[in-house]
Length: 358
Image 1 (tube, rainbow, N blue to C red):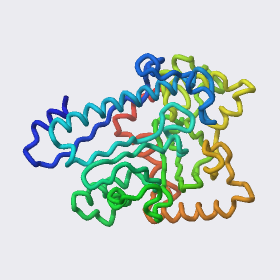
Image 2 (image 1 turned 120 degrees about the vertical axis):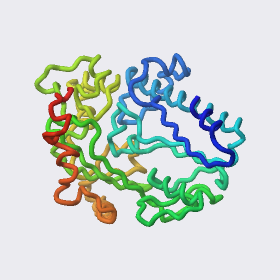
Image 3 (image 1 turned 45 degrees about the vertical axis):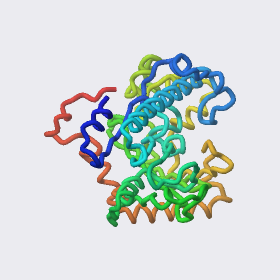
Image 4 (image 1 turned 90 degrees about the vertical axis):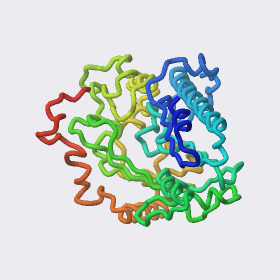
């Protein structure tokens, strides 16, 4: 394929960069494919589901199918590594394997700042990298750019927000390597442009330490995963629409069987509270104790015994937003709240006359 062509056309000793970004794990995928293609039995997940995912057959199958797509992606990585071996370049190539967001189309997943939405794998190998280790330092994908520069002998510009991982990669330590890496910062503005009727975002910023996650929701008056189109006044979306059309309702969560199932049971006594927890409006501050509540289900922001840690994390988060000149803090977030970032398009915008799809 194109990777083989790239290596073949490469002049001897010339450096190269190849980015492999498959869509396997993006919605939608074929129902039952996890079992049919990868022998991942949904029933094997029974009793193992995190608290934010209903432990029911429909959701277990959806998750098994997602795992199947991960297996397909893993197999594709294997093909690329074989090509690298065949070209004799493995020992002189820095290889980084990661993802850009958490699981799509699931509660707490993509478009959320909970761990299931922001946590991704990060595996690195290559010359100078000490392998056979698991490192627990808090790192972010923005750290990769300065890492690549330092690995190539180029000093990262001071303006870069990320911090090079090269010293950690070259270390022989496992667990916590750099004590200064005790947190990461995450943020979100928008996913689908018409997630809300007025085309506005859902601004969030968060700080995640080893023990806690604090999220600030700047506009708690808005629906976090998009307006519940059709769920209040109708017309009620069909199961087929919910499984295949992300924009039909709650558009900031991708369409799929899990979303369809939860919408379908939202009025029943057993699942009403769960539905409101994952799709309902959220308070301005969320605080979770990750040691005792790894599923991030119990918001402790107003708990009297957690006010000290809340204050500390809020101060650290605010300091980082100021340090990085986050536009969300300027003029009530005007940059993100007005065209072209949000709201109605400019009159001369080609999209101005285009009807937004539900």
